[in-house]
Length: 362
Image (cartoon, rainbow, N blue to C red):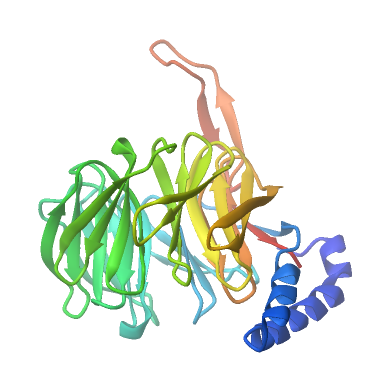
């Protein structure tokens, strides 16, 4: 898709700002003053920079950004679309992933993993060729949904929404190692870089901690003020978790003790969160067409910086830590009148309306 005239007219300015931000990243460690100045620059207001038409049939779920290759993986029901987020070009599609929800990347092993909810399997694919290498059955785990890779243990964790457990897969040989029982329905997960993975338990308003080396739950924390935790992100430097809740709240939780540090307002229908360490910004994407942006002033001080407009239905996202842009997807819908037995009108996606939204501050 060709950029709009307004975006093109500001191209030189954007390139200049990107150059400044690259210098900032190199100098931020030099002094606290420089770091503070650069963070302020990175925290400018977010707005829609590009909108690329991707097209194709089917709904969508999670997005995963691969920084080394600058590729975006978008799950689309029975396949994964691989997109260049800079140009909006569709590069390839990974097929035969029925009911796919998420993608996890093991870059050091050159492999990716998809969670296929309809046939209870994990597809293993080559990151260079995007060809399928293997398929692992989540025996005892039904409807694998969110999926995450832990680089410390070199294991993959797939959260099984229907059976309320999690499948652990050895990424070295792609074998199912164990299935971990959970207290309720798992929704999202994040690795802390030290061999632990945190998991939202949606129907119990809890967070579970999993030791990936041992394959066991080591703790469960209640989340007061949070109803149906959905999105999850982490600031590993300050040991803070960002939990997006369906009662329009974002909880900041101490990842060492489970203590709720702060509660902030967000939009309706959160499904994903992200944290940008360079800018100190936490993001929350909602289905009501908003992107909530929270500033981390310190490990214990947080404030809502902005509520940016995206598009209705853009509930999932991925963060590019190199240019600090946020990628979301949505489509245009039309409603058909409710028929006998239906409680509300049926929403139908308009053909070829599926699009990639690029949000940024420059």
